[in-house]
Length: 249
Length: 249
DNA sequence: GAGTGGTCTAGACCACGGT
DNA sequence: CCGTGGTCTAGACCACTCG
Image (tube, rainbow over the protein chains, first blue to last red):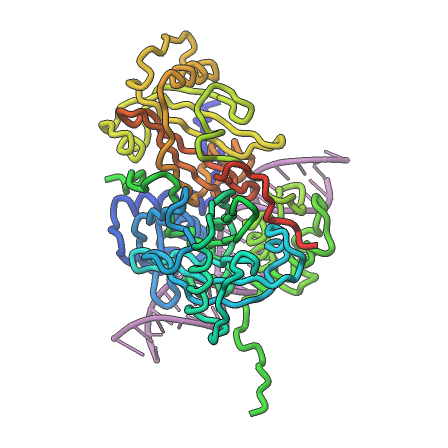
């Protein structure tokens, strides 16, 4: 009878740990500070290392921690606000300040892309690779798919691939009366090449932003941009100025 | 000398497994089909169950699988396109078809919310809880924070909390000339209450959509909506019609 | 080479859904 | 009740960074 509500719902250990660590981060650590190593933390909390790691993974997913092999675990700065809409920064012009073209070639896109562009499977398109940097850190890798019919006046290039070719394609695109439509965001995991470009391991969580660029007549290009989910907050309003996060205080 | 490129970069097992399983899902399984259980799959691939689970977690993160304790692992349908912008569905009116008010009270918001609303810490605000359903499945849980000054004419209620009170607050909000601004999307993990509402476990990955609603004069309300990251694709264009995903074929 | 996080193993037990 | 996925353990070894 005298049961005084003893642990109605026994929370998983890793979840409780996450909470405890989260509060410790708020009150006892500063941005950039290095945490004790995993083996020590596990011992200190009396759990197996795997359990401790499960808690750290959560916090990394939430953008609170930054873990690097061979280095250690550090307290992450607040997420960077990255403007992706409505029609602003992601615009496919040659190097603005945020996007930098890294390469381009002419090849067959994935089947799903061909479908979206209403092209027969296996049709080659221009594939432009760009990378986005913010505050000195790489935040996004983009693949821009441009059907040949969208850039009929592209000059024959002596460099079959590379940044120069990419810029040439982007210049041609600017001649079109483009409208960005059907932007969508979903969670994904970084493929090996994206991961390398974003300085992460394969499988790292990313936010995939898909954008259709249309002319009045047809779909002129398709952009698939993968943003680091741990460090980025994607903003769509007219400014990303208003801050929500603020490490308590 | 005669080294013929033997595994230049030994891929992690779980990543390779993810790829193999992903291809198997494309070619040998149909949506809704139940996979063999984890112990069997692990044995079949000759790996420990933990490793197999790491691969399954990746696929679940990518929205390819659906795992339920006590039931099994099934092939997930393609992600649902959920419209969240620019000014459409997420509008805080009383029950439209997509949002359903579930409750409301007057209480002090988290410090970060108070800051964003430019209120002194500890100031009580109306907190309206809503839930969003799509295709019969819960996809989002929202907390809408409304300062008392935004709804001065709210009638005194005999029900101090509950759906009726929530609808009353939402009705009052409609009297204002609201504009949605500074919408942002970031990755988060579901807190215990959100998780329950979304039929997931605590810590499940979610897409957190933060929206500021402003009048010409000031910030009138703040919405924090958490969407299931595994089942949703958030769309911002004028329609979510154009499909990108299509299980190869 | 020393120290870090990343991967992997082989087991155990628990919580939940259906029968 | 049984079978499922979820949690947890105690170890081992690997890949990486840095002094």
